[in-house]
Image (tube, rainbow, N blue to C red; front, side):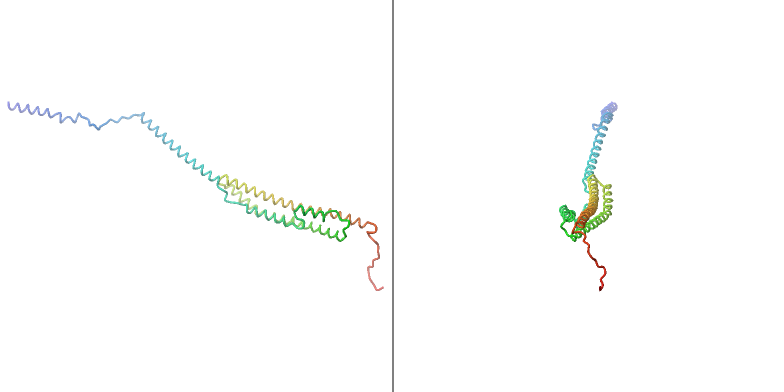
Length: 253
């Protein structure tokens, strides 16, 4: 009896102890979780990330365009680092000085009117023959001076050709290498100024040649008028030619 009771007690103790030892096999930890993959949610996340990246790229492109626009504006506003104004002004001044150095009758309206009234006008009926000769010599000197002035102006304009050629080459190079619109415009304006200077030289040559030709024609007209007056005096009775005795050789007889 005692042996049976001991076996029963041992069996009961074993059965009571089984749930404690086997319980971890049936209880899940509280921290464990299942990972579920949702394709729709994943696609939406990828799409949102792509859109965000595209917006960032667009912003970067916009900033680059704005920076380039500012650079272009700065170039367009940059001034041309070259100026031919001083050289062109010097060429014009040299030509102007030659015109101002005109001899005898200058390029002055009042002086021209006075000269034509006194020297190139109608021959005076009361002037002596010596006065007529003096006026004729003065007109001849005016003509020669006018021709000399014209040649001096021509020489000065020819001297400006080398300067103009160098300036034209420099300005064309500046125009072709212009960094912006302002530099190109300024180079073009200086080329126009060079053209204006060349036209000024051409005008000076035409004026000087015209002055010389006008003085020559005026001298010819005044000489014709003076010749008529001298012929009139020669043919006037009692005043013209008077015969007389002339002795070519002197001797003791």
